[in-house]
Image 1: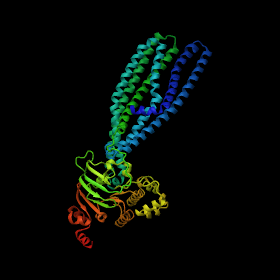
Image 2: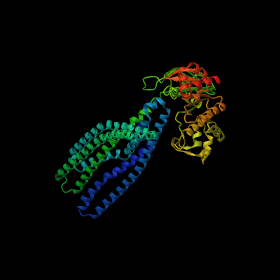
Image 3: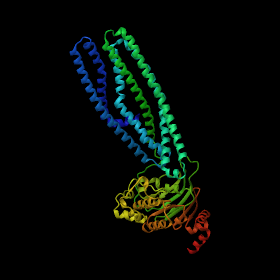
Image 4: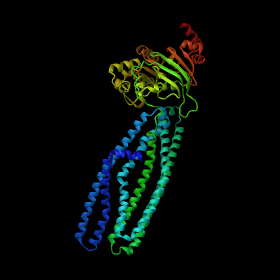
Amino acid sequence: MKLMFRFIRRHTGMFLTALAFLTIETFADLLQPTFMSYIVDKGVKAGDTATVLRYGGIMLCIAAVGAVGAVVRNIYASKTSQLIGKEIRLTIYEKVQTLSFENIDRLQPSAIITRITNDVTQIQNFINGIMRIMLKAPITCIGANILIIIQVPKLFPLMLLILCVAAVLIYCNMKLGYPRFGTMQKKLDKLNGTSREFLSAIRVVKAFRAEKQEQEKFEEAAGEFAHAGISAMRVMAVFGPLINLTVNMGIIVMLWLSGSQVTGEIGKLMACVNYMTQVSFSLAMVSNILNSAVRATASSARVQEILDEVPAQTEVDTLCENLQGSVTIENVTFTYAGSSRPAIEGVSFTVKAGETLGIIGPTGSGKSTLTNLVPRFYDATEGVVKIDGMDVTKMSMDSLRSAIGVVPQKALLFSGSIMQNLRWGDKEASDEEIYKAAESACAASFIEGFPDGYETDLGQGGVNLSGGQKQRLSIARALLKKPKILILDDSTSALDATTESKVLQNIREQARDITVLLVSQRISTVMRADHILCMEDGCIKGFGSHEQLLAGCEAYKAIYKSQIGEESGKAGIENE
């Protein structure tokens, strides 16, 4: 609840305005039965038409005031709740951007999405409900009870009993509902995760004809969510009618007692029945809004969990200018959260500024993990990662990541034009610089082949491009950044050998001062690097030039033999 009221305080003026007009609307509703009783008892009963018209006119004026109050209240309530919902979502988004990969891995992307969308919607609906019915319900309930007692004082014990029974039922409703709504939101996390996984891998699913298998997984997640929802709604289904039953029984008792207490005063009886109906309606509203409060409280706790998340990485303000790009890894070990064994262990090497380091090894050998430590996507569990002799954990994120260009294994593009995607590398880059970067990445030819050229719109993730085209655009985007360190994480895997060779040659020729960390599973990609790091099971098996590793590293020789062949290897050594 603290989270909600913290954001409500930002809009105190609009919030209080909505409550003020809500109060006017509520009092207008409460006055109607009383004036109706005056019309019946003082006008109709006495045959006084003037009295009927006078009180009828007053009722119309009260109804008009109530209608104006309702309209203004709705406007301010909707505006306030929408603004608060926007601000909470923005706050969560800003917080997530400060978190490291480790935090996001632990929170899970699908759960974060649920909290930004569904959980905030629950909070938003509750805040809207506060301004629409939360205050109206208790005012109506208390006011109707007071007016009934004023009309018929002897009904006080009955009204007190009804309120006590209703309070007990509402408390039980909340007590049983809170854990069930919390479970419901967790099941929604799982459902969103299943949906996200299916949609992101839909090509693989269709390729393997695994639609039925995925449908079963989705059906299971949807079933769990449905059962959690049924369990939560069952509580509402039981206690809502019980509250109505309590009030209706009170009406029956009141009618039975009225025979001796309001004899001849039909207007008072009508007013009391009307007020009892209002009590029933207000108690139902209280029950509903408290159910909404239970859901909002559960959602608020889930949102607060993200806002309270402590970033796994400590941000510092040390600016580092004029970095040269040398990389030193000193006895580094890294273990992913929740893993029982290190992904890399005891890794040490140095790459001078402007050199190219090829990193090769089988799948799961720790190649990508190692390169993720350089831009601090993760922090080493043990050991130190240095750039220009300085510990990366002592450098500001802006200084560090401004000096590093990363092209990940999976080429990531965004909705928008090709030009907009390339400008991610440098928003201030001139058109000539963009064209040059595209040329270096061998992307210019296919870009210019599109009717709209660089203004060609890309679908989400670049779905209208081939894998090789997406990789070349990603490389061009990184080159446009003019980094001191360029990490190519198996980012030429979709290119043919000729295009790959040309791209790497262009990088070597046009960016001689850039330190390149070149990750690949292909010998042909890394063999011309200044140094090659051969990894296996998270450990270094060899470090040196192609010739040195071919002569003295069994793991590297095994890879070479499997890809190129032993005879070709001997011939290659002799020719070189």
